[in-house]
Length: 90
Image (cartoon, rainbow, N blue to C red; front, top):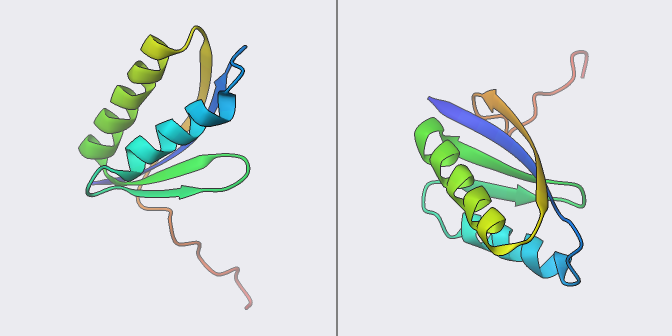
């Protein structure tokens, strides 16, 4: 089973917040079997359900252990949503 996860990370009161965000993304990109896509608003992770969920949760835990306060906003949807379907009528 595949899953798609959209994540936004907000490290609160961190002077180097961009460093924390990029470190999180780089660690996810280093995991074999996951496709990680970023844009200006969020990061999307696509892959095998068990692998993706366990690795994302491990990385969230690592951030919470290393940063005083961080908020994660996540969306989880079953299936691989990395390819957008064409709009009907096109």
